[in-house]
Image (cartoon, rainbow, N blue to C red; front, side, top):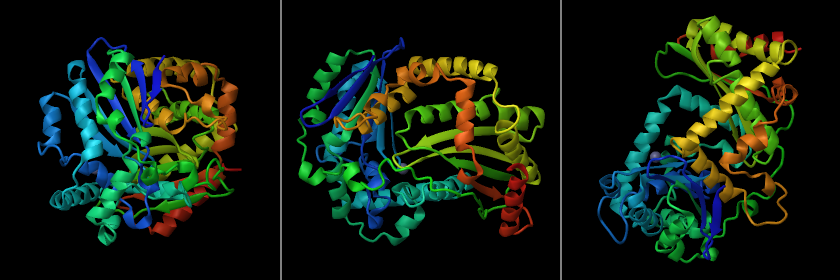
Length: 460
Ligand SMILES: [Zn+2]
């Protein structure tokens, strides 16, 4: 059972006792600030600010990553559309020192003009690396269609944002930092052997608790920003589309993202059912598509299926990669599995559900005992964003900490639940196919037409 506390200035803290025997604390500092909060002319700035938090503070010029490395700590940070994360893992003896340093980064970064120039180039190079990767570009394309007309349709960062670059002055970027990097936008989630009371004592000595909150500058409640969108079902009828992306180099493989629009973050039951279904189809050696495509036919190396949800909707995504010459065969196998086998014929078996439950129970425990990452991130993200104090939130009781997910949402799942979820979400209307097919001498339009036609040989 975790313990929670909200400090006077609005800073939130959630503590889970680590069940590991090693004296390492895992810390996820989550900030309620992502690319969705940015005006068009400042897109990319949330990611850039995350970078600038490692470039020096007003109190010290000592290299920040080096200070963590001297403690032997692991540190990382990343930016998503929804949030910014700072991750720390360190020995229990160094927690106080690491926490103080992290707080300085988040409240006292100096944003030196010359450092900003250099770091801008670093970020541009990071984008170059990503944009040379066809699977990344395919993911962005899929995201833009699935979340069309919502703040989630645009990527966190892209080369395009930096080409324009207008509006990016030291002042505009620094003002954003001051507006969003405030205690009441933050949640510190930890898994640690150090007790809750010890953490409270340590946090009280840092800026996380001492820093005053300036609500006038920082008032950015998500619900007031996007009132019309919240909790609206974004699926608006037929959508089915096929897109092929151009490839930059000669590629040996064809890449597929076969996605279905699903439900919002708030549909707790469906969300976890979809998560369960994702493992019936892919990700494990015993999953249906893995067995079909790899074990039985040797056509692919891997099939992964992932689920994501946000305030506006969600996605169920099947991803695979195969030889260019096999792309049509692989596509047809997947279509047949979804639209004939799953929807009409031999559906998911009770035995599959039983096996997968045991898999989930043990895998979730493995994270609790080993890295703690999924657990600490889940607790930080969900409790920061969705477990607020509004009484009108009828979903509040549905937000559960990581350790309770299995018992609450998975333990009692039945074969009937899975059949229902397939019937509800894996429909052709909700489907978006994005592919990047390497060295093939057909035009983009021809491939799209072909895939379209093949799909409808299975959809009745
Ligand atoms: Zn970065």
